[in-house]
Image (cartoon, rainbow, N blue to C red; front, side, top):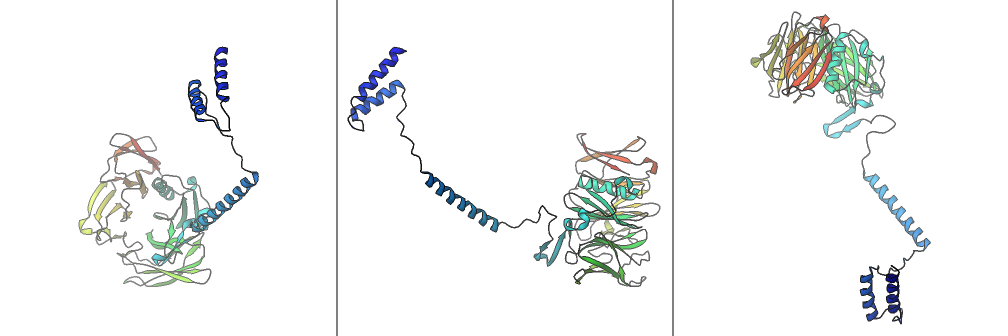
Length: 416
């Protein structure tokens, strides 16, 4: 090793003797290159030049100003978000529709439950309805409230992130609907009507600035007109009873809302066969089918003990209706605006506390029902629906489990 180092030093010394100016002549450069290659030496590096501190400081200042200008410009161009850390989003106006829509998350009821209830404290009919809702949304409710205590009672149920459901529960009957926006009366209302326990009721959701709601109905051949029936309003929920003689002829309903600033707005709900309210789904005694259905094409889908499930295409060609009738009192359910495909693998409910009825996913080939005493029964869906009548009250609660063709469990729902 010592001999090798001495040889390198001798060769480098010979090269340095030929340097006569700050630059090497051509012969020396060539010899240096050859020697560097033979000795594996790195080429000479030029010393780094450091920028004066003042130049670095000025450069940083200019860069900071440029970044600030870019951030300001981008922020000015970006639309403002409808959500913030201090509260729910503000109402959103859609000019193209000629009115406004109010996000239900802005309602006081969405974040504050008046007369809060637990699932264990609910009456059986509301508990069954809540099970159906929880199955539909695939999650338990965020809150349950009973702002109007009846009968009929009005319940408000919230589901994350933006669903507010209003349920009207009487002694024997119940109805519900869920909303993400209020679209009627300029964004002040979401209103519907139903026949529950032999009473005609108008109910729904109201915006925070609604101070009062009055309801009137037009006269029919058998029912006199009613005017200015004041709705019971509490925590964004309302309900108002109207005269009803038990027949199918229902006059047009006018709902008038008064806001805290003194302004008013009206909503009209059509009678049977109309586009709004219960007209499309109420069973017409003359045909035995919803008014929105083509009764001439109705057929039995499933029959099970004291219950029958029917179906018929809509008369306007926009899908189909499914309705159930339950003996002996003739109660049941009716649906004519069905999402396709189904929202959940299991969307079941209990009718008249003795009938299991509902829709299942397209890949479900069987549903096993387990009763409270441990006994089981197996149901095969028909066109995506199941029906089981004659359920004894002692058999509840029951659990329905859905399976696909491969035998894999794809959904479970507990009711009762």
